[in-house]
Length: 175
Image (cartoon, rainbow, N blue to C red; front, top):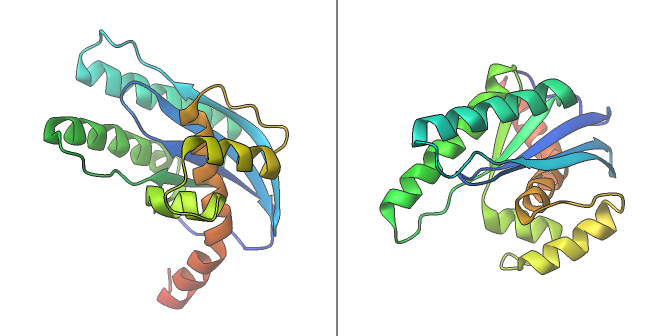
């Protein structure tokens, strides 16, 4: 998996992992220009066993990846909360969110939630409303159907913004 050139137009998928709803957002980035491509979410039925829900997330993401053919992916890192079991389950969904693009040979980057907020809004503790406002400015054609899809677009934007530095670091590291 090799990083794409910095100046060429690049299609990026952002993924906001979750067991109930895994958001995805696809943009194209060319230099500083961002273009909305699509967004949505994969929503496995709540009554499915965990393994079946994870499979549904994988299959849903695989379809999105096949349909939109991004060249790079970005996934939000999981924050640890007080409920250890919930954190572990979310980690499993995150694993699927990282595995699906990797299976397509797509480079996967990871970003902390505060880094996403700081990149898109300018403040690391921004709320979802502030993210929605900035998404309307940065991607005027986007109308995310859920907060998870909006978060996924924000993750993709974060990757578009930070990929230049990552590409340089990968080049220096010889990757």
